[in-house]
Image (cartoon, rainbow, N blue to C red; front, side, top):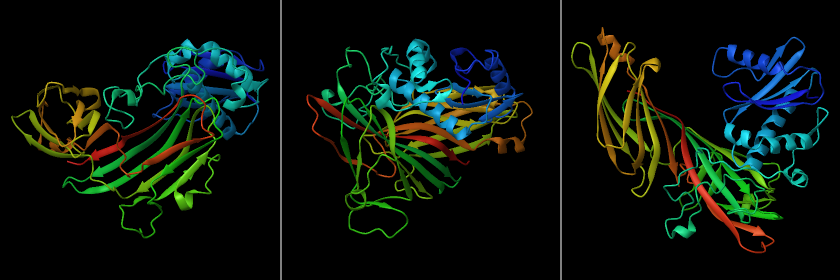
Length: 442
């Protein structure tokens, strides 16, 4: 039984507040935020207690989604409800951010009225809620991981008319009859997160890939969608058969709505998508990287003058020549006490800065073409520098995005809808890999 639901910004601003039972005062918002900010560590407890009041919260889109209660409900039920509330907010508002919540507060209050009655959860189904929600969303365009407008995100390198806008999927599922309101579209995203540790000798020490197939549906009705994956997809560590280059994952999980009667034989997923976003498949590949690591670093660290460290970095992008890495960021820990830095960069679009509070230097590259090689020389001034201080340099961590790339090689062969949609319906498939943890030891 839920007493209150409220949404706070990362700074504690009150965005949404709904009291269902009148059991607690509005001061509970300030109590919760004081408890959260007083905790040490980056990840506070999901469930917290203050006197006879319990707070259960999740973090989504940089916001706190909080439910308070005086009873003792299942915390997993409340957590699942809060995650579903955040997902519905994203579906109906188009994006999940402080700005979109502020612009669509009336719509979110209407969602809460239909989802919860006197503290009891009624429904979280998009198909049911769309019959009752009348408020139209106000669209905003915040930064998104997939806002890669300068590349062909959806895999097309032909005519511009065959490439969807990068923000096409970041719109409300029930948008008004505007520029995009009447389009029947469905988006299928293959998203992979790459975790890698590379030794100082350049040898791959650890590799882990977490992937998912996510769909976002803007079709008013669709009885069934068939997603064809690689025919040579192998699951588990069994021996690979056949002459083609097989794609392998260690394990995979499916959404409960996915039908698997054709998966074992033909590698076809069948699902009846509802409007909005859902993850139909999650997969994992451990201790193996089917392709070469996307980046190789060749570092050099030496002591120059009495109080200066020279850090030379040569970074090579091992992607195919037609591919491009975006938003590449390289973080290098430096000796504590570093006060200033000068740099020599190989191209004018690169930037670098010293972050004394984090004891690190940050090198940023907005676009990195495949097969290219960039270099940078950093001269860091460290008062009282000793030989032992050189050991504080490293390891290097990187973050980046690889559009149109999957490290496992998983591909969508086809995407078919049945029955055939009346009128024009568009289907988009896009691939993106981004770094979860990419560490290179020096």
